[in-house]
Image (cartoon, rainbow, N blue to C red; front, side):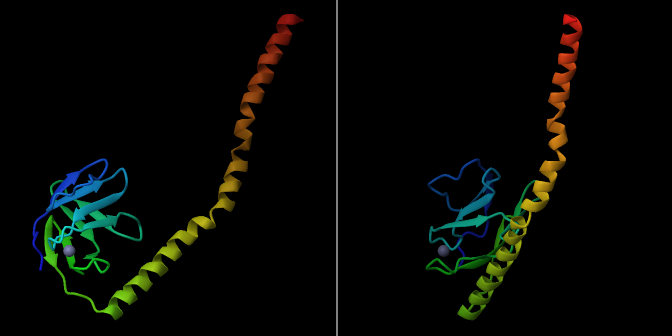
Length: 153
Ligand SMILES: [Zn+2]
């Protein structure tokens, strides 16, 4: 059962230790959303905002989170959707579905985080491309030396 059917978004820098029930703490600084479980059990629910985790929509007044919040690792095992500050209870998942979702999540993260590992090569190419730029001060020095030489000659 869901006790908190309405959440009040609160934009914070850091998330407080004590979570007020019914408040959705949004920290853009840490790219995370934290709230006290909507079932009322008081457990902290952390939904990180990453390309492979949750996405937050803010229309200026209300917040929606996508996908749903499945607290499989909490004793309450609550499952709900946060849409326009409202909390909509979602059906409970069986172990097979939870396992399938965990596999999908793992694969999505592996695929996503594998990409930056291949980036160093292009990055190295970029750094050699920018190398001539770092020689500019040298040219400036030469110019200065040339001027100085002109003064001394
Ligand atoms: Zn709960």
